[in-house]
Image (cartoon, rainbow, N blue to C red; front, side, top):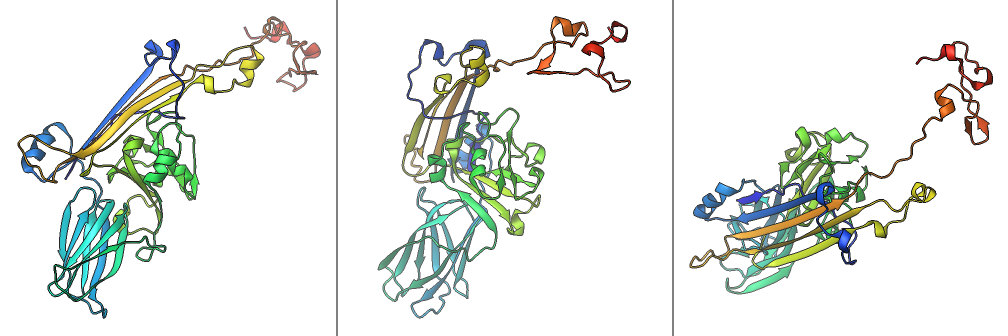
Length: 410
């Protein structure tokens, strides 16, 4: 069970800021300042009492468990071994799931959350086998192949480190993955995770929002020439599309709370079908046995920008453009005084606040002259060319390029 208080409307982000705040650049900008904040809390527990208490304050949402792990257990002569005990262990939290191989030596773990896992195989008369580093990503079927058991005592153990498969052999779907490394290393101006979709092939990218969530939801790009209404965009398996559509993502999720983004573009299994287009699933982070945290501050300011052409033409300074985003997150194991929770309760909490000052830019308008307001366009030029004013009745220019007073409509 996974409990979550979904992130409230958070916001923006940009280039790292190392410039100190001056007196006019403080985080409080008065009436025209936009201030946004977000918090996110997750917990995982097998204790009914704790679960009941948490449900009073937090809405429960199930993180997607659409992935699976499959494999076969055999001996060194490749003969399958039925009745072997197989345990799937989450290396971050220590959670365990157990299964027993069938008569064909096969095992299946369905509904597996993304993460890194260890497979432990035991059978009387054979050495215990542990295969570490099995990485499960969202919406995939991970095949670990055949796990060979060697004859020996059950107390003897063989450790194996998994290696990433270079070719996908278990699924024919067309999919892409934006992993945690890419999320951390690629700079996104508005700190909106939907912007990462633009780096994928086959994506018709729109305009990146200036801040997280844009105005009424983040526009989702189109994939492979299809309309955005065919998309399905989710967060931890929960639909986040505006009015059940995939054109806008309204379930705003903070960038630093995401561990990966999985995109299924076509030929995926029927279990993912809904709208017939691209399936996008954002997987959020959760706490583990070790404590991890981070903090950040991002600043965007007109002092980093060049002035635009029309401001320079009219002798005007740079338009005000100020975004400041600060926040932090931490996750780990929950420890309660005088209560031994073991490895059953974890947390991940995040806070981010963005404050901005970005009034509308100065606009340039061409207004009619005093002569033009009287119907006299004899001195109205576009460069060196007179702008003709034609009579709508015959299509000819008015004599002298002046509208007769009798034809004027006051």
